[in-house]
Image (cartoon, rainbow, N blue to C red; front, side, top):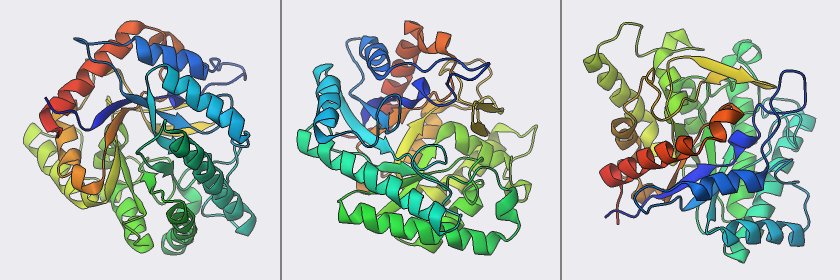
Length: 342
């Protein structure tokens, strides 16, 4: 049986879009998210690890070494490891827009430095042996970017190059997640242009998410780059999927298994982006197992050691339902069996 890539669950669905403002659901603690992950089991198989957002209330990015080691002990003590880390690059966390002025981009780079520091502590502890550090442009929406697309892409690329140098100095790789809500990364074509302008494939690659990249196909925030239109046939879908993945797969170093129903969704301060749906959602547009194969082809050669489920902005009642996680784990095992390696 294929045992690579390892199967991870994301911790940030307990945080992203959650909060204390009116109408928001409360965050779910790290320990509770870990317990929900550990409880999932399918035919004796369990999740191997977690991917982890480096911000409050799960983690203070300025935690002491000892505090971070306690978190590592907590995760390891539950039989899990840590894979990819999410740097707190957004306004309102540590960072700010990668397209902004020097004050903003300095904050962005500080967030990457803090993430690299935490990664080093987790690596030395032993709870983390693989994975990337995730970033994006942290520039909400595309209106400001559209004022001067070429110049603004260059500004983001310049910030990303500096971030990649920081990561390389720490022995880390950065994965830029393609989501339609992030300027300069909001379509498959613009994402590719940004990756090529940075041109540091050994250090900065792409994180593909099945839900978000489905919206790439539909050209939600960039109709000029759409590869599909409503009413498409199955043949048209797979032709378009191959076009997109052939372009972005060579850059892909981190991968999120997910489902999307063709809708966008936002919660709290998080702008509307590809809606994550349950793995067995009857309205899901994706054959998860088949689509995953397009991204995971030659994955070992690109240094992919794990895949992660992303259920970002699931309602709390869904997150607290054990069957949610068993269904997800079952789906991920099927992806591993179909496209994994020894």
